[in-house]
Length: 100
Image (cartoon, rainbow, N blue to C red; front, side, top):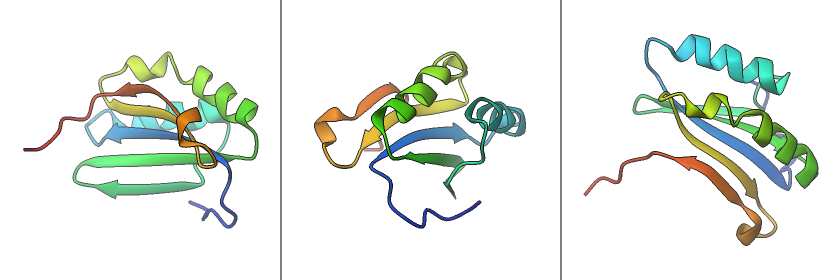
């Protein structure tokens, strides 16, 4: 994965459970995005992917393209993050379970 050299104003964030279907889901995500993620981290059986964008329109285009695949149970989070204005961020899916 290439590092995010310059922080982008917008990001599309996808969290994927690392199950037997992980490889296929990852391949689908990269195919839809038409690019490898700018950043990826694995932690406790989950892998997150981040694609950075300079414009909201670009980030929104990818987010909308990922809507259909986000129905897969392996996809836990789909979020368009705006780092300049947190109120402009949109979470389309969040199936994380809080630990108590």
